[in-house]
Amino acid sequence: MVGLLLTTLSSNAQKKGKQDANAVAINANKEAVIKSLTASYEGDKKTALQIWDFAEVGYKENKSAALHIQHLKDAGFTVETGVAGIPTAFVATYGSGSPTIGILAEYDALPGITQNAVAEKSPAAGKNSGHACGHHLFGTASVSSSIAIKELIAAGKLKGTIKVYGCPAEEGGSGKVFLVRAGLFNDLDAVIHWHPDDVNAVSTTSALANKSAKFKFYGISAHAAAAPDQGRSALDAVEAMDNMVNMMREHIPQETRIHYVITNGGKAPNVIPDFAEVYYYVRHPKRKDVVEIFDRVVKAAEGAALGTGTTMKYDIIGGTHDLLINRSLAEVMQTNLEKVGGVTYTEEEKAFAKKLQPTFIGAPVAVETAGTVKPLSFISEGNTGSTDVGDVSYTKPTVGLRGATWVPGTPAHSWQAIASGGTEIGTKGMLVASKTMAMTAIDLMSNPILIQKATEEFKVSIGDYKYKALLGDIKPALNYRD
Image (cartoon, rainbow, N blue to C red; front, side):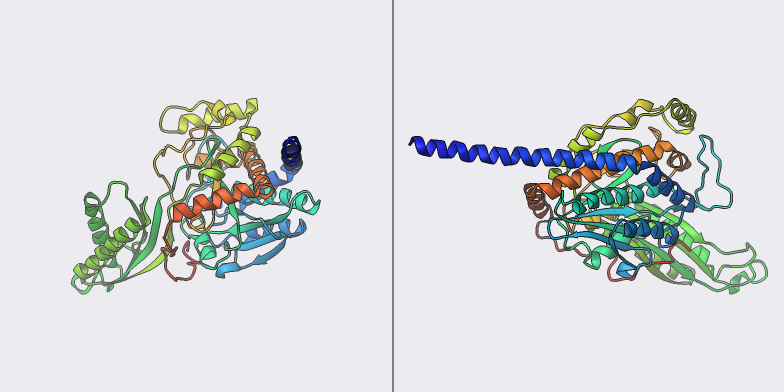
Protein backbone atom coordinates (compact mmCIF):
# COMPACT_ATOMS: atom_id res chain seq x y z
CA MET A 1 0.00 0.00 0.00
CA VAL A 2 2.81 2.35 0.94
CA GLY A 3 4.64 1.43 -2.27
CA LEU A 4 1.58 2.22 -4.37
CA LEU A 5 1.20 5.56 -2.64
CA LEU A 6 4.85 6.42 -3.24
CA THR A 7 4.55 5.41 -6.90
CA THR A 8 1.48 7.61 -7.32
CA LEU A 9 3.17 10.56 -5.63
CA SER A 10 6.23 10.09 -7.81
CA SER A 11 4.10 9.92 -10.97
CA ASN A 12 2.21 13.08 -9.98
CA ALA A 13 5.47 14.83 -9.23
CA GLN A 14 6.88 13.88 -12.63
CA LYS A 15 3.71 15.06 -14.35
CA LYS A 16 3.81 18.36 -12.49
CA GLY A 17 7.49 18.69 -13.31
CA LYS A 18 6.77 18.31 -17.02
CA GLN A 19 3.93 20.84 -16.82
CA ASP A 20 6.18 23.33 -15.03
CA ALA A 21 8.96 22.81 -17.57
CA ASN A 22 6.47 23.32 -20.42
CA ALA A 23 5.17 26.52 -18.82
CA VAL A 24 8.72 27.81 -18.45
CA ALA A 25 9.45 27.02 -22.11
CA ILE A 26 6.24 28.73 -23.26
CA ASN A 27 7.01 31.87 -21.25
CA ALA A 28 10.57 31.90 -22.59
CA ASN A 29 9.26 31.67 -26.16
CA LYS A 30 6.82 34.49 -25.52
CA GLU A 31 9.56 36.70 -24.14
CA ALA A 32 11.62 35.84 -27.22
CA VAL A 33 8.90 36.94 -29.67
CA ILE A 34 8.25 40.13 -27.70
CA LYS A 35 11.97 40.92 -27.94
CA SER A 36 12.08 39.97 -31.63
CA LEU A 37 9.02 42.04 -32.58
CA THR A 38 10.24 45.02 -30.58
CA ALA A 39 13.55 44.81 -32.44
CA SER A 40 11.83 44.59 -35.85
CA TYR A 41 9.42 47.43 -35.10
CA GLU A 42 11.23 50.17 -37.01
CA GLY A 43 11.40 48.00 -40.13
CA ASP A 44 7.77 46.96 -39.75
CA LYS A 45 6.76 50.58 -39.32
CA LYS A 46 8.51 51.45 -42.56
CA THR A 47 6.71 48.62 -44.37
CA ALA A 48 3.30 49.62 -43.03
CA LEU A 49 3.76 53.25 -44.02
CA GLN A 50 4.94 52.23 -47.49
CA ILE A 51 1.74 50.27 -47.98
CA TRP A 52 -0.26 53.16 -46.49
CA ASP A 53 1.27 55.30 -49.23
CA PHE A 54 0.59 52.71 -51.96
CA ALA A 55 -3.12 52.64 -50.99
CA GLU A 56 -3.98 49.95 -53.54
CA VAL A 57 -7.61 48.83 -53.84
CA GLY A 58 -8.98 45.28 -53.91
CA TYR A 59 -7.32 42.84 -56.35
CA LYS A 60 -4.95 45.63 -57.45
CA GLU A 61 -2.60 45.37 -54.45
CA ASN A 62 0.40 44.45 -56.59
CA LYS A 63 3.10 46.46 -54.79
CA SER A 64 1.65 45.78 -51.34
CA ALA A 65 1.50 42.01 -51.84
CA ALA A 66 4.96 41.97 -53.43
CA LEU A 67 6.45 43.71 -50.40
CA HIS A 68 4.97 41.17 -47.98
CA ILE A 69 6.00 38.27 -50.21
CA GLN A 70 9.58 39.49 -50.40
CA HIS A 71 9.84 39.84 -46.63
CA LEU A 72 8.52 36.32 -46.15
CA LYS A 73 10.86 34.87 -48.75
CA ASP A 74 13.80 36.68 -47.17
CA ALA A 75 12.81 35.11 -43.83
CA GLY A 76 12.91 31.61 -45.30
CA PHE A 77 9.23 30.96 -46.05
CA THR A 78 8.16 29.03 -49.12
CA VAL A 79 5.64 31.26 -50.90
CA GLU A 80 3.00 30.20 -53.40
CA THR A 81 1.63 33.19 -55.29
CA GLY A 82 -1.46 33.74 -57.41
CA VAL A 83 -3.48 31.21 -55.42
CA ALA A 84 -7.23 30.68 -55.96
CA GLY A 85 -7.02 32.48 -59.29
CA ILE A 86 -6.11 35.79 -57.66
CA PRO A 87 -2.83 37.46 -58.73
CA THR A 88 -2.36 39.28 -55.42
CA ALA A 89 -3.18 36.32 -53.13
CA PHE A 90 -0.49 34.11 -51.63
CA VAL A 91 0.23 31.41 -49.07
CA ALA A 92 3.61 31.42 -47.26
CA THR A 93 4.68 28.33 -45.31
CA TYR A 94 7.45 27.50 -42.85
CA GLY A 95 7.98 24.37 -40.80
CA SER A 96 6.51 20.90 -41.04
CA GLY A 97 4.05 18.67 -39.27
CA SER A 98 1.40 19.47 -36.71
CA PRO A 99 0.06 21.67 -35.39
CA THR A 100 -0.46 23.95 -38.36
CA ILE A 101 -1.49 27.52 -37.53
CA GLY A 102 -2.67 30.06 -40.10
CA ILE A 103 -2.38 33.82 -39.76
CA LEU A 104 -4.43 36.07 -42.06
CA ALA A 105 -2.97 39.18 -43.71
CA GLU A 106 -4.93 41.92 -45.51
CA TYR A 107 -3.61 44.91 -47.45
CA ASP A 108 -6.35 46.50 -49.60
CA ALA A 109 -7.38 50.16 -49.38
CA LEU A 110 -10.75 51.85 -49.92
CA PRO A 111 -11.58 53.88 -53.03
CA GLY A 112 -12.85 57.46 -53.01
CA ILE A 113 -11.29 58.56 -49.73
CA THR A 114 -7.82 60.03 -49.20
CA GLN A 115 -6.05 61.90 -46.42
CA ASN A 116 -2.63 63.07 -45.35
CA ALA A 117 -1.29 62.06 -41.93
CA VAL A 118 -2.48 65.25 -40.24
CA ALA A 119 -5.22 66.07 -37.73
CA GLU A 120 -7.31 68.25 -40.03
CA LYS A 121 -9.09 67.15 -43.20
CA SER A 122 -6.48 67.22 -45.96
CA PRO A 123 -7.03 64.94 -48.97
CA ALA A 124 -3.80 63.54 -50.38
CA ALA A 125 -2.99 65.07 -53.74
CA GLY A 126 -2.90 62.70 -56.69
CA LYS A 127 -4.62 59.84 -54.87
CA ASN A 128 -8.14 58.45 -55.09
CA SER A 129 -7.92 55.77 -52.39
CA GLY A 130 -6.71 55.42 -48.82
CA HIS A 131 -6.25 52.98 -45.95
CA ALA A 132 -9.38 54.04 -44.08
CA CYS A 133 -9.70 50.55 -42.57
CA GLY A 134 -6.05 50.13 -41.61
CA HIS A 135 -5.20 47.10 -43.72
CA HIS A 136 -1.65 48.41 -44.24
CA LEU A 137 -1.20 47.72 -40.53
CA PHE A 138 -3.16 44.46 -40.65
CA GLY A 139 -0.95 42.73 -43.22
CA THR A 140 2.30 44.02 -41.77
CA ALA A 141 1.55 42.82 -38.22
CA SER A 142 0.47 39.41 -39.49
CA VAL A 143 3.63 38.93 -41.56
CA SER A 144 5.86 40.16 -38.73
CA SER A 145 4.28 37.91 -36.09
CA SER A 146 4.59 34.92 -38.42
CA ILE A 147 8.28 35.61 -38.98
CA ALA A 148 8.77 35.74 -35.20
CA ILE A 149 7.16 32.27 -34.92
CA LYS A 150 9.35 31.03 -37.76
CA GLU A 151 12.44 32.03 -35.80
CA LEU A 152 11.34 29.83 -32.89
CA ILE A 153 10.68 26.89 -35.21
CA ALA A 154 14.07 27.36 -36.86
CA ALA A 155 15.74 27.42 -33.44
CA GLY A 156 14.03 24.19 -32.42
CA LYS A 157 11.98 25.94 -29.74
CA LEU A 158 8.64 25.16 -31.40
CA LYS A 159 7.39 22.28 -33.52
CA GLY A 160 4.81 22.56 -36.25
CA THR A 161 3.95 24.71 -39.26
CA ILE A 162 3.12 28.39 -39.59
CA LYS A 163 1.24 29.67 -42.64
CA VAL A 164 0.61 33.25 -43.71
CA TYR A 165 -2.37 33.87 -45.96
CA GLY A 166 -2.15 36.92 -48.19
CA CYS A 167 -5.81 37.89 -48.47
CA PRO A 168 -6.68 40.61 -51.00
CA ALA A 169 -9.92 42.51 -51.54
CA GLU A 170 -11.52 42.13 -48.11
CA GLU A 171 -13.38 45.37 -48.79
CA GLY A 172 -16.25 43.98 -50.83
CA GLY A 173 -14.31 41.54 -52.99
CA SER A 174 -14.63 38.54 -50.64
CA GLY A 175 -11.05 37.49 -51.35
CA LYS A 176 -10.84 34.92 -48.56
CA VAL A 177 -13.97 33.16 -49.79
CA PHE A 178 -12.12 32.08 -52.91
CA LEU A 179 -9.23 30.82 -50.78
CA VAL A 180 -11.71 28.86 -48.64
CA ARG A 181 -13.42 27.51 -51.74
CA ALA A 182 -10.03 26.37 -53.08
CA GLY A 183 -9.43 24.34 -49.90
CA LEU A 184 -6.38 26.34 -48.84
CA PHE A 185 -7.35 26.27 -45.14
CA ASN A 186 -8.16 22.56 -44.98
CA ASP A 187 -4.89 21.46 -43.37
CA LEU A 188 -4.97 24.02 -40.55
CA ASP A 189 -5.66 23.41 -36.88
CA ALA A 190 -6.56 27.04 -36.07
CA VAL A 191 -6.60 30.51 -37.62
CA ILE A 192 -5.49 33.82 -36.07
CA HIS A 193 -6.32 37.31 -37.32
CA TRP A 194 -6.75 40.89 -36.11
CA HIS A 195 -8.14 44.22 -37.24
CA PRO A 196 -7.28 47.89 -36.63
CA ASP A 197 -9.72 49.75 -34.38
CA ASP A 198 -9.83 52.42 -31.66
CA VAL A 199 -9.79 49.89 -28.79
CA ASN A 200 -7.78 46.89 -27.65
CA ALA A 201 -10.09 43.90 -27.36
CA VAL A 202 -10.48 40.27 -28.35
CA SER A 203 -13.23 39.96 -30.96
CA THR A 204 -16.29 38.30 -29.45
CA THR A 205 -19.03 39.75 -31.65
CA SER A 206 -20.15 38.13 -34.87
CA ALA A 207 -20.33 39.90 -38.22
CA LEU A 208 -23.15 40.41 -40.70
CA ALA A 209 -23.45 37.95 -43.56
CA ASN A 210 -23.30 39.85 -46.82
CA LYS A 211 -24.12 39.40 -50.50
CA SER A 212 -23.32 42.01 -53.12
CA ALA A 213 -23.80 42.55 -56.84
CA LYS A 214 -23.62 45.12 -59.60
CA PHE A 215 -26.94 45.53 -61.44
CA LYS A 216 -26.50 46.62 -65.04
CA PHE A 217 -29.37 48.09 -67.08
CA TYR A 218 -29.39 48.48 -70.86
CA GLY A 219 -31.70 50.93 -72.63
CA ILE A 220 -31.83 53.00 -75.84
CA SER A 221 -30.08 56.33 -76.34
CA ALA A 222 -31.90 59.32 -77.84
CA HIS A 223 -31.85 63.12 -77.70
CA ALA A 224 -33.45 63.95 -74.36
CA ALA A 225 -35.23 67.05 -75.74
CA ALA A 226 -35.78 66.37 -79.45
CA ALA A 227 -36.75 62.69 -79.35
CA PRO A 228 -37.34 61.49 -75.77
CA ASP A 229 -40.03 59.07 -76.99
CA GLN A 230 -37.37 57.22 -78.97
CA GLY A 231 -35.30 56.51 -75.86
CA ARG A 232 -35.47 54.07 -72.97
CA SER A 233 -33.48 55.31 -70.00
CA ALA A 234 -31.24 52.87 -68.20
CA LEU A 235 -30.90 55.48 -65.45
CA ASP A 236 -34.68 55.47 -65.00
CA ALA A 237 -34.41 51.74 -64.41
CA VAL A 238 -31.73 52.22 -61.74
CA GLU A 239 -33.82 54.86 -60.00
CA ALA A 240 -36.94 52.69 -60.20
CA MET A 241 -35.02 49.78 -58.68
CA ASP A 242 -33.68 52.01 -55.90
CA ASN A 243 -37.17 53.30 -55.13
CA MET A 244 -38.60 49.79 -54.91
CA VAL A 245 -35.78 48.57 -52.68
CA ASN A 246 -36.20 51.58 -50.42
CA MET A 247 -39.93 50.83 -50.09
CA MET A 248 -39.05 47.20 -49.39
CA ARG A 249 -37.11 48.26 -46.27
CA GLU A 250 -40.41 48.47 -44.36
CA HIS A 251 -41.09 44.81 -45.03
CA ILE A 252 -37.82 43.09 -44.17
CA PRO A 253 -36.28 42.12 -40.79
CA GLN A 254 -35.10 45.20 -38.91
CA GLU A 255 -31.55 43.86 -38.53
CA THR A 256 -31.10 44.04 -42.31
CA ARG A 257 -28.74 46.57 -43.85
CA ILE A 258 -28.98 47.45 -47.55
CA HIS A 259 -26.66 50.00 -49.17
CA TYR A 260 -26.12 51.03 -52.77
CA VAL A 261 -24.17 53.47 -54.90
CA ILE A 262 -24.88 54.39 -58.52
CA THR A 263 -21.61 53.61 -60.27
CA ASN A 264 -22.74 54.75 -63.72
CA GLY A 265 -25.68 57.03 -64.40
CA GLY A 266 -24.90 58.33 -67.86
CA LYS A 267 -22.58 61.03 -69.14
CA ALA A 268 -24.69 64.02 -70.24
CA PRO A 269 -28.16 65.27 -69.21
CA ASN A 270 -29.28 65.74 -72.81
CA VAL A 271 -28.50 62.16 -73.78
CA ILE A 272 -30.85 59.44 -72.56
CA PRO A 273 -28.47 56.89 -71.00
CA ASP A 274 -28.43 53.52 -72.72
CA PHE A 275 -26.41 52.06 -69.82
CA ALA A 276 -26.54 52.54 -66.06
CA GLU A 277 -25.23 50.52 -63.14
CA VAL A 278 -25.89 50.35 -59.42
CA TYR A 279 -23.79 48.45 -56.85
CA TYR A 280 -25.70 46.84 -53.94
CA TYR A 281 -24.80 45.28 -50.58
CA VAL A 282 -27.34 43.22 -48.64
CA ARG A 283 -26.47 42.32 -45.02
CA HIS A 284 -28.10 40.41 -42.19
CA PRO A 285 -26.85 38.50 -39.12
CA LYS A 286 -28.05 35.21 -40.65
CA ARG A 287 -26.69 33.92 -43.95
CA LYS A 288 -30.06 32.32 -44.89
CA ASP A 289 -31.88 35.65 -44.54
CA VAL A 290 -29.24 37.43 -46.61
CA VAL A 291 -29.86 35.06 -49.52
CA GLU A 292 -33.65 35.47 -49.30
CA ILE A 293 -33.51 39.28 -49.09
CA PHE A 294 -30.98 39.49 -51.91
CA ASP A 295 -33.33 37.46 -54.11
CA ARG A 296 -36.05 40.05 -53.41
CA VAL A 297 -33.65 42.81 -54.48
CA VAL A 298 -33.13 40.92 -57.74
CA LYS A 299 -36.91 40.84 -58.24
CA ALA A 300 -37.00 44.62 -57.77
CA ALA A 301 -34.34 44.96 -60.47
CA GLU A 302 -36.34 42.74 -62.83
CA GLY A 303 -39.46 44.81 -62.18
CA ALA A 304 -37.57 48.04 -62.82
CA ALA A 305 -36.35 46.76 -66.15
CA LEU A 306 -39.85 45.63 -67.13
CA GLY A 307 -41.39 48.96 -66.17
CA THR A 308 -38.84 51.09 -68.04
CA GLY A 309 -38.54 49.03 -71.20
CA THR A 310 -34.92 48.14 -70.52
CA THR A 311 -33.03 44.91 -69.95
CA MET A 312 -31.05 43.92 -66.88
CA LYS A 313 -28.32 41.55 -65.83
CA TYR A 314 -26.36 41.39 -62.60
CA ASP A 315 -22.91 40.22 -61.61
CA ILE A 316 -22.30 38.81 -58.15
CA ILE A 317 -19.29 40.59 -56.64
CA GLY A 318 -19.08 39.09 -53.16
CA GLY A 319 -20.76 37.03 -50.50
CA THR A 320 -19.62 36.34 -46.96
CA HIS A 321 -20.84 34.31 -43.98
CA ASP A 322 -21.38 35.61 -40.48
CA LEU A 323 -18.45 35.18 -38.07
CA LEU A 324 -18.27 32.23 -35.65
CA ILE A 325 -16.78 33.10 -32.27
CA ASN A 326 -14.61 30.45 -30.60
CA ARG A 327 -14.67 31.07 -26.85
CA SER A 328 -11.83 28.66 -26.09
CA LEU A 329 -9.46 30.52 -28.40
CA ALA A 330 -10.76 33.92 -27.27
CA GLU A 331 -9.81 33.15 -23.68
CA VAL A 332 -6.28 32.21 -24.74
CA MET A 333 -5.88 35.38 -26.78
CA GLN A 334 -7.31 37.57 -24.00
CA THR A 335 -4.60 36.40 -21.60
CA ASN A 336 -1.92 37.35 -24.11
CA LEU A 337 -3.48 40.71 -24.99
CA GLU A 338 -3.61 41.63 -21.30
CA LYS A 339 0.06 40.74 -20.96
CA VAL A 340 0.98 42.95 -23.94
CA GLY A 341 -1.22 45.85 -22.81
CA GLY A 342 -2.32 48.90 -24.77
CA VAL A 343 -0.68 51.91 -26.42
CA THR A 344 0.98 54.79 -24.60
CA TYR A 345 0.81 58.13 -26.42
CA THR A 346 3.61 60.70 -26.38
CA GLU A 347 2.71 64.32 -25.61
CA GLU A 348 2.84 65.05 -29.32
CA GLU A 349 0.46 62.18 -30.05
CA LYS A 350 -1.90 63.36 -27.32
CA ALA A 351 -1.97 66.77 -28.97
CA PHE A 352 -2.73 65.11 -32.34
CA ALA A 353 -5.57 63.17 -30.75
CA LYS A 354 -7.05 66.20 -29.01
CA LYS A 355 -6.99 68.12 -32.29
CA LEU A 356 -8.60 65.25 -34.22
CA GLN A 357 -11.36 64.38 -31.76
CA PRO A 358 -13.51 67.52 -32.29
CA THR A 359 -13.99 66.39 -35.91
CA PHE A 360 -15.95 63.33 -34.68
CA ILE A 361 -19.70 63.27 -34.22
CA GLY A 362 -20.51 62.61 -30.58
CA ALA A 363 -18.74 63.13 -27.28
CA PRO A 364 -14.95 62.62 -27.22
CA VAL A 365 -13.62 59.34 -25.85
CA ALA A 366 -10.82 59.53 -23.32
CA VAL A 367 -7.47 59.28 -25.11
CA GLU A 368 -6.17 57.11 -22.27
CA THR A 369 -8.45 54.24 -23.34
CA ALA A 370 -5.89 53.40 -26.04
CA GLY A 371 -3.67 52.26 -23.20
CA THR A 372 -6.21 49.84 -21.76
CA VAL A 373 -7.50 46.39 -22.70
CA LYS A 374 -11.23 45.72 -22.67
CA PRO A 375 -12.27 42.80 -20.47
CA LEU A 376 -13.41 39.66 -22.22
CA SER A 377 -17.17 39.62 -22.69
CA PHE A 378 -19.40 37.37 -24.73
CA ILE A 379 -22.42 39.64 -24.36
CA SER A 380 -23.27 40.65 -27.90
CA GLU A 381 -22.78 44.34 -28.64
CA GLY A 382 -24.73 44.04 -31.87
CA ASN A 383 -23.43 43.10 -35.27
CA THR A 384 -21.81 45.84 -37.30
CA GLY A 385 -19.79 45.24 -40.46
CA SER A 386 -19.11 42.21 -42.59
CA THR A 387 -15.90 40.31 -43.20
CA ASP A 388 -14.76 37.42 -45.33
CA VAL A 389 -13.05 36.07 -42.21
CA GLY A 390 -16.55 34.73 -41.55
CA ASP A 391 -16.09 32.09 -44.23
CA VAL A 392 -12.73 31.11 -42.73
CA SER A 393 -14.43 30.71 -39.34
CA TYR A 394 -16.80 28.16 -40.92
CA THR A 395 -13.76 26.17 -42.03
CA LYS A 396 -11.47 26.08 -38.97
CA PRO A 397 -11.48 27.40 -35.36
CA THR A 398 -10.74 31.10 -35.69
CA VAL A 399 -9.84 33.87 -33.24
CA GLY A 400 -9.10 37.58 -33.66
CA LEU A 401 -8.47 40.81 -31.83
CA ARG A 402 -8.85 44.51 -32.40
CA GLY A 403 -5.91 46.80 -31.78
CA ALA A 404 -6.04 50.52 -30.94
CA THR A 405 -4.43 51.94 -34.06
CA TRP A 406 -6.75 54.95 -34.30
CA VAL A 407 -7.42 57.80 -31.91
CA PRO A 408 -10.19 56.69 -29.50
CA GLY A 409 -13.60 57.49 -30.97
CA THR A 410 -12.44 57.26 -34.60
CA PRO A 411 -14.97 55.60 -36.93
CA ALA A 412 -13.69 53.11 -39.48
CA HIS A 413 -13.78 54.05 -43.17
CA SER A 414 -13.11 57.71 -42.34
CA TRP A 415 -10.42 60.22 -43.23
CA GLN A 416 -9.59 60.33 -39.52
CA ALA A 417 -8.73 56.61 -39.62
CA ILE A 418 -6.38 57.21 -42.55
CA ALA A 419 -4.75 60.09 -40.66
CA SER A 420 -4.13 58.05 -37.50
CA GLY A 421 -2.96 55.04 -39.50
CA GLY A 422 -0.31 57.15 -41.20
CA THR A 423 1.30 58.05 -37.87
CA GLU A 424 3.02 56.19 -35.06
CA ILE A 425 -0.33 56.03 -33.27
CA GLY A 426 -1.22 53.42 -35.89
CA THR A 427 2.07 51.52 -35.92
CA LYS A 428 2.21 51.30 -32.12
CA GLY A 429 -1.19 49.61 -32.15
CA MET A 430 0.10 47.33 -34.89
CA LEU A 431 2.88 46.19 -32.55
CA VAL A 432 0.32 45.29 -29.87
CA ALA A 433 -1.44 43.09 -32.43
CA SER A 434 1.70 41.38 -33.73
CA LYS A 435 2.86 40.49 -30.21
CA THR A 436 -0.57 39.19 -29.19
CA MET A 437 -0.96 37.04 -32.30
CA ALA A 438 2.53 35.56 -31.97
CA MET A 439 2.01 34.73 -28.29
CA THR A 440 -1.33 33.12 -29.07
CA ALA A 441 0.29 31.02 -31.78
CA ILE A 442 2.91 29.87 -29.25
CA ASP A 443 0.17 28.69 -26.87
CA LEU A 444 -1.58 26.76 -29.62
CA MET A 445 1.61 25.17 -30.90
CA SER A 446 2.72 24.22 -27.39
CA ASN A 447 -0.48 22.79 -25.93
CA PRO A 448 -2.47 20.24 -27.98
CA ILE A 449 -5.32 20.38 -25.45
CA LEU A 450 -6.09 23.98 -26.46
CA ILE A 451 -6.53 22.99 -30.10
CA GLN A 452 -8.59 19.97 -29.08
CA LYS A 453 -10.98 22.15 -27.04
CA ALA A 454 -11.24 24.73 -29.81
CA THR A 455 -11.95 22.04 -32.39
CA GLU A 456 -14.66 20.44 -30.27
CA GLU A 457 -16.32 23.84 -29.81
CA PHE A 458 -16.02 24.54 -33.53
CA LYS A 459 -17.79 21.27 -34.39
CA VAL A 460 -20.66 22.13 -32.04
CA SER A 461 -20.99 25.61 -33.60
CA ILE A 462 -21.08 24.21 -37.12
CA GLY A 463 -23.52 21.42 -36.30
CA ASP A 464 -24.72 19.67 -39.44
CA TYR A 465 -24.23 22.73 -41.67
CA LYS A 466 -22.31 22.00 -44.87
CA TYR A 467 -20.39 25.06 -45.96
CA LYS A 468 -21.40 26.59 -49.26
CA ALA A 469 -20.05 29.90 -50.52
CA LEU A 470 -22.80 32.54 -50.75
CA LEU A 471 -21.25 33.86 -53.96
CA GLY A 472 -21.64 30.50 -55.68
CA ASP A 473 -19.11 29.29 -58.23
CA ILE A 474 -18.21 32.68 -59.77
CA LYS A 475 -14.62 33.64 -60.46
CA PRO A 476 -13.04 36.48 -58.46
CA ALA A 477 -14.30 39.85 -59.71
CA LEU A 478 -10.76 41.13 -60.28
CA ASN A 479 -11.96 44.41 -61.80
CA TYR A 480 -14.77 45.20 -59.38
CA ARG A 481 -13.09 48.48 -58.40
CA ASP A 482 -12.89 49.70 -62.02
